[in-house]
Length: 458
Image 1 (cartoon, rainbow, N blue to C red):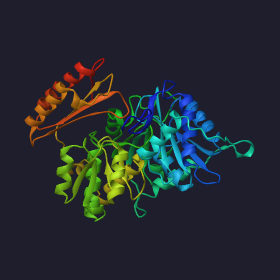
Image 2 (cartoon, rainbow, N blue to C red):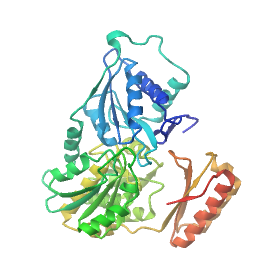
Image 3 (cartoon, rainbow, N blue to C red):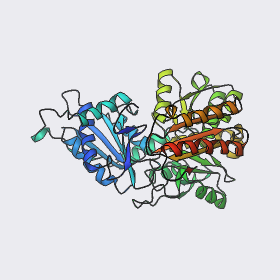
């Protein structure tokens, strides 16, 4: 990521109204994105969408002002899932798309991320160019005036457009008739569109997390807190539970018995079916270093291969586009089906799982048996700075010590979060108690050198 001042692994993110998530920076980001994409002498347009956070109003208006001040028009879509904004950007031939969301974070945070006109997230080089515009004060000598100033208008049918788009990823010869689905929209951006998609395809839909008030997004609901969903699924005797995050690009599912299945399980289920139908390009799935070793084993048994990209869905997508793969994702629930969309999409991912359930006429618990999960521990340590871990001898020596102990029976992966001040320690192995002690052993060294407050364990 170099020495970038604003951008992390998924746009700019932080506490709303605290630098860098201020109205002033949002305005500058608006000016910068307009400048970067305003390459030809014609009328340009940029799409802006958001989730349901209270601070979205402030940041949205600042972004609109910045973009319009550069002579570029703005199309406002309001609350819509991140993948929906990517779709609208591409389908309406806009020059770029803006998403105002902090995804799975709590309501006091917010973020800004960008899509290019083809619906893909911006590469590092363009994000660096945006930062350069802001911090080197590269303001054009001529600012538009009179009729050359940009204008803003709302796309009133954005939700309907996205519902149709999502439904088109489901096989036309199939329906969801007879299935009872519980969908948890995390009081976020998908609260209108997700229930509508599943209902229109024939399912009986029970919706939770669909009453946003600006402060309850991701609050003990959605993909980060699937226990609520699991209890409702069991109580309603539903066939499946679908949990989305605040901006609708992650998916966690729950089987009819209330068992929670993460992104690795979803990828195993979908990749195996695509291998069976000869639809998995190059017989290869793209995952990340965080994915469970059980996924590797499941894909190998199904006759496929797995390669690992860097953590972050944009790096998964980069690997997929570069080498022509069509399925990839993260354990966290970002799943990318490039045959259908350009970014992680919780609704479309859920529809692929549902199509497999319908085709195979099996309960989700049976289909999920394709993957056996290796014990895994993830410990997060809050840090005051993100110092190179290799340069901290006490940390690097403990990591090497554990690598030697695990040998081929497990693995350790330590990295910094790209969106929060956290060091993440992930260890897999045969015995959960043993690997938990190992993770705490490394966490202790990190906390001593650069930590603050207490460990956060997931």
